[in-house]
Length: 174
Image (cartoon, rainbow, N blue to C red; front, top):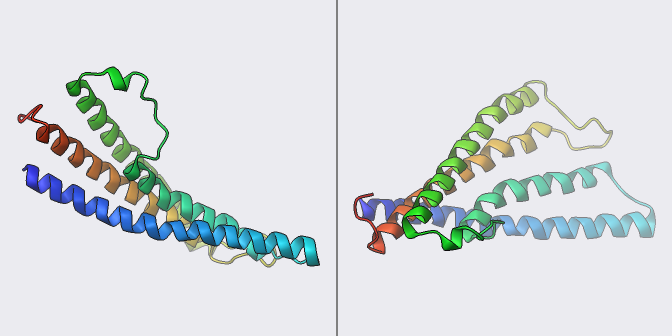
């Protein structure tokens, strides 16, 4: 069972690592777009609603695809004040509960966002501003996709916690 869990965790982590690295280029695109927008606006008094909206759309993609990568890499904010002093078994339970809650909350977001995306798609929602980006449903569709990646991260973390606990010899009965 440990080998299977390790394989599942490794595959999930590999996929999320690949997606996270690809997503880092979105941050570069945002910076480039902002520099261009600001330069054109202040040097030539040129600006487009489309380019400004694109900044927000790219930011949404960065956040939604980056959150699972941040958790994978341990770059999330957490409080270790109490956790550091816990016994290994208590740490196991906290880690398993954290992974399970991540999955539950992400599934809830997926469930709640599907209707939101479908409604946007069915009405052909577009930017309310003239010259804005059409197909607003596309950016909204990133919500369930991003949270699906978070579900994968939660499952991978759950598997990894069990494997690490068993590998340390602290419990072969889990």
